Length: 413
Image (cartoon, rainbow, N blue to C red; front, top):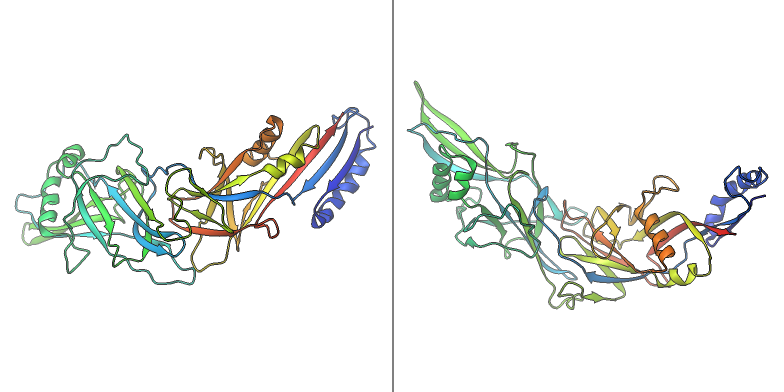
């Protein structure tokens, strides 16, 4: 006969298991082999009281090539320091080899963006953004993976007008107009290398996220050139748009100056700090490192363990500023960030859709750490593709802010 017992180390969880206990008591009277255990005895456990050590670490560079969003702006945070985000772009023709009429006259050109604030107050704090438009001196490398700390050279002459910041300087506008005329994309790129959009660090407070449209969508994020030509009877006014979209070669540059803050000692990749609080920041590579020493001690008492389900809850401090909408957990190499945590209220939840989900990264990772006897570290990282936000966590042994809920079966021969 198959023998089953249940061990629970969390009082609230006992109620969850009562129904299962009744069912298992009936199942245990079935013939050996019906459930495939033969003469094995099994003990099912639930534990959520194991303490995980947490620290803040700079880990790995963040690749920012060809994101689906561009970020422009700056903010000064008392804990995270001064953050500056700029975007570098190739301009895309909305149609190749457009020939303007020989008498076409350019009237003006404007830079049009549609975006939403990324780093902002949850209660709707106003933000302000002033930026400069610069012309690149070299084309972007289409095969290079640019990272957050990378930059490229540009002519530091602002191509926007001083009085109306939406309008391009007339000389640059004419340069664009001439480069468009009768040229294909590669010919245009040889003439206009690209542009850099850089925030003014004095007059800006906030980072704005500009989602990029699919290829050749001229409805938002573009440079609009207004020109006129003589029609059959009257002057005709029309427009041509250069596009900033997902077909453009592009990358974002995000830098952080933490001088004089609690996080001042985090300067190079691999730097780590343990404080009473722990910190996460999008785009900068500031992540949470989890150490499982206590888990190793606990699971060493079992001869053979099969993990059934692993869930994680992570409480974030309630602050004025918005936090990342999603975070991920994965290897300390920064790859295999397979499980996403979604925030509900002030807690991030990493949940399996169903128990015994073999596709869960955490489930497979816990099993491999146990089987290999190597309980290393994992990283929690913020989402970046849609935001440049930050979050603060409190976590001590006396007052845990992170909880692993682990369901596992002990097999005894």
